[in-house]
Amino acid sequence: MNIEIFTLGPLQTNAYLLTDEENAKAVVIDPGMQPEKLVKRLEGLEVEAILLTHAHFDHIGGVDQIRKLKQCPVYLHDEEADWLTDPKKNGSARWSDLGPPIVTDPAEYALDDRQELVLLGQTFKVLHLPGHSPGSVGFLHGNVLFGGDVLFRQSVGRTDLPQGSWNDLMDSIHGKLFQLAEETVVYPGHGPKTTIGYEKQNNPYV
Ligand SMILES: [Zn+2]
Ligand SMILES: [Zn+2]
Image (cartoon, rainbow, N blue to C red; front, side, top):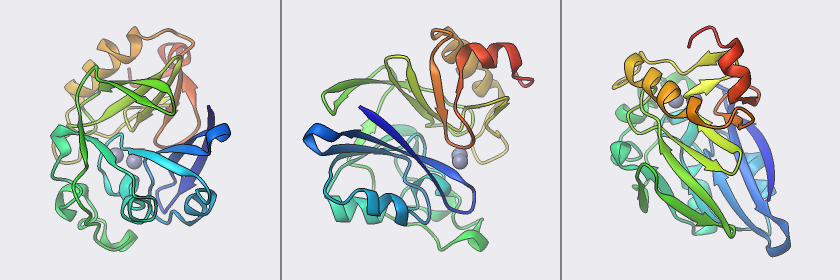
């Protein structure tokens, strides 16, 4: 499985493209705003799923286009089930200077903590990581975590947005992420990748 990073839109949100080149299959994580270069790369690939770490506008701007083009299902945690259809909840109404309001159909599948997804013939474990948003999740594949806006390199997700919670964020980081192996590589929603071990040593917010 290959991992490609596409940094998209005005907030420089990381979309991840996971590919099984042999079978021309792919999974897209967090297709953000202005997804053109990602969409172009999807030519000739069958998309098995769009996985969302959470439904803030900067992570979902490309959902509608890719879902229609590739006829693929979207996975999102239950706590944010009504965010894709509601620009107030996904934040696109408040940040209208950054782009049009985002309204798309609800996710096809609701994610739950500890659920295991099999995609591209691989297993991905869902970790519910509330705090930045109530339905934030990470997708753990072996020693790789696609973590959304929970833990960044030397930073953490903001908790001042609707339904954010600093206490929940710290519980998610200490109770779940810091229980993972130190060598676990974290691919975050913004900025460069890091590891659990590096953040335990160097992150000033935890
Ligand atoms: Zn966010
Ligand atoms: Zn974000």
